[in-house]
Structure formats: C-alpha cells, structure tokens
Length: 431
Image 1: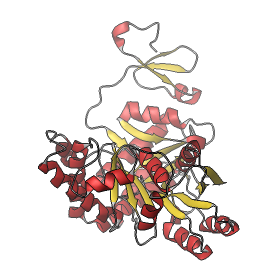
Image 2: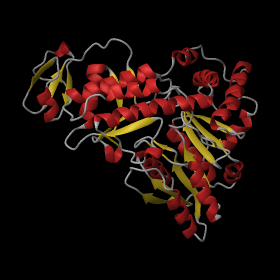
Image 3: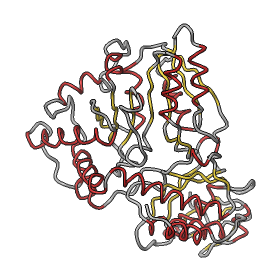
Image 4: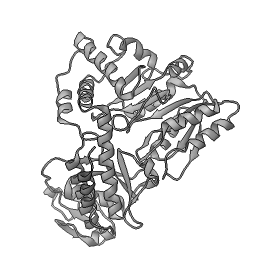
C-alpha cells in the first residue's frame, strides 16, 4: 500500500513499526502520520544479501553453477548415470544402506509421503508437540484421517523419551502404529535425542514404527538412520544440503517397506513402490527435478570433500559462538536445556513489549540481513538465527554484528558486546 501523500514514482515502503521503534527514528524516514506508521524509502543494498534464516540457506556458487547447467533428457543415459550417483551417494548422509526415495517436493511433501506409505486411514499415531513443525506434522496427519494422539509441551525442551515410553506402555492393545518425532525443531531450536527415544520404545516391546522429521538437521547434525533404528527419515534439500528448495527425501527401513505393502492409503505421486522400481535403473516414474539433482551431486561432492563429521563439528563450533553472543546480550534462548540446543539455529526471545517482527524489519532494511521469524506461539515474540549450510566465521560474525546494531536501533534493552564474545569464542577454539 502506498502513502497517499507520496509521489507515485517514489517507491516508498511502509514499515508498520511499534511506537518504540517509531520514536527511535530511522534514517531516511519521510515522516510519521501519527499512527506509528513510518514511510521509509528503500535503500539500494550493496554486497550480497545475508540469508540467515534456518532454511532455505544461502546456496554456494558451486551448486548454483551446477543447477544452472543445461537441462538434460531425463529418459537418456546421461541422466541415468546422474540419478544412480545421487541415489547411492545420498545414503551416506542419511547413514543408511537402504533405499532413499527422492521426490520433487518440499519437506512437507516428504512428510506426507512417510505417512501415506506406512499407514492406513484411522491408524493411531503418537507425537510430542515441541514446536510449530511438530504441530504442523500432527495437523497433516490429522487431515489425512489418522487418529493423532498429541502430548503437548511448553515449547522450551526437546522430546522427553519418558513421555513416549509411558504412552506406548499404556497402549496395551498396540493401537499406536507410529511415533512421529521432529529431530531438530526449527521453531524453537531444540534437538531431540533420537537414540534415547528408540531405546525407550524398545523397552516397551511396542511394535510402533519410528518416523523422524530431519528436514533441518540432515547434513548439518549427526543423524544415523540405520544405527538409531529409524523407520522413515524425512528431509528436504534446502537446509544442510545447501540446495534450493524442491527435493524431498524418505530414507526407508525394511520394516517401513513391509508396512508400505499393507498400507490402504490411496496414493500415486507419493508411492514408494512406483519410485523404487525405476530408480534401480536410474529413472523416475515421472519428470524429476533434473537440475536440482545436478545440484545435489555437487552438494554431496562438497560434503565429501569437507568430510561429513567435519561438517558436524563446524556447525557445532559456530552454533556455540552464536549462543555465546545471545547470552552476552542478556537475551533468552528459547531452548532451556543447553544439551538440547540446536547446532542449526538459535531461537531468541525478545523482552515483553518489543515486537520481534519490527526488529527483523529494521535489520532487513538497514543491513540487508534476513533473520527467521518467530512461528506459531512465538510469532512476534522471537527471532531465529540460522547458522547452517555453507557458513564460516566471517559470515556468522557479520550476522551477529547486524543483530547487535539492529537491537540498538529497535530500542531493545540489551548488553552490548555479544559480537566480541562470539569472536573470542571463535578464536579460542578450533572446530
């Protein structure tokens, strides 16, 4: 919406700021109509945009060049070689010897595929709501017609294995067919201990499958599909794999494959059976995302060059520096247990009375830096720092500089010096 007082060609941008931000004043402001609405002429930003949301992440130039190659015939021998290479190579990131199905889809599509291939209408599933993405997966299951039992929490901790164990032990009729767990909850920055959840399930002797959403953890944090006894691991291309959005993944156990043969859900596009046959010869039952698969080959090569375990260490090292900065600012990290804090993102709570979305807008307009929004219950109360993918020390400290300057401009009470604390943390340690 344009200011009626402005000239049509001014291209003015309306920033709907809180009274606090409006009183602070923003350089280049064109005035205040008394309603708390400021009209700010957009800046022409120099340099590259800092995309520090928890995905999609910035895409490395090597992958951009791979994706930009001419599209090839998806029925020809060149594509078959590419497909076999990525279908085999991606198993190493999932740490599985079994099949990985790749859909042209978002992570949400892959979440739906995990359900419709392993379950049947009105089957009962168990989930623990620890954030917005676990809530959304439960809602997806509910819309499919599944009977969803949700254990609610306050969104400050990861999944407690004892809650899962108790619920399964109480299910003496073994009606629960699957347990759905988000590994890295991208709304809160809490990481659930999948091996401990698997052990808790095993102690009950319950046959429920374990379905894990690893959309934001795969390729950035340790995940072991086979060793941890996961039946379906769901992921996407736009986070730790450093690709643009558009690929959804299902890593599948033998137990899940057996369940898929009994599933009574109608499915076509999401059918594992339709995929796995053609995949053996390097083909797909429909047009695949050919150029994204070229990018995936490059991403897998980059991960191999760095070493997957080194990738995990780099993420942990940078994440600790980010959290050190937040603690030095005197702001609250949403994840209350340090042992459960994510190496992929940090969710930061702003003090009461301060609008996190207005703060994010100031940071974007002044410094060309995108931060993640607070989601669900945390909307307007929190912002999220993404520290994943193709990221190094200078990129992280630049991000933290933008945040510290933004806090000052937005009038948020904080203790200066978080950036210095992060730099000291980074120079004192090696990943």
